[in-house]
Length: 124
Image (cartoon, rainbow, N blue to C red; front, side, top):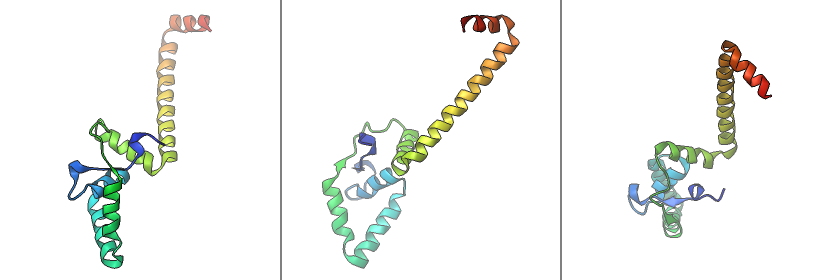
């Protein structure tokens, strides 16, 4: 998974400070408010939250503008990053459903049209 869509980026368009929390929201699908709360709690409890936030902000790249075409594609890539195996299973299930529906259409047209059925059998 080395696609540019599977990498972590800072999201400066939806940013409050450096775009780290909005980038984490884009990467994981968890709302940025929860990430901000987590960094605040981590800073108060251990003092590690603020340095971690700035380290992520300085080390990560800015999100390219052309990364996603639409909201649906963004959600798809979030699911891929969260669980690639589950996403592959979902895609396989969709293809099986499409294949089943195509077989139903083919059966309908072949059984209702004997000339077409004979032509298909002749081609086999």
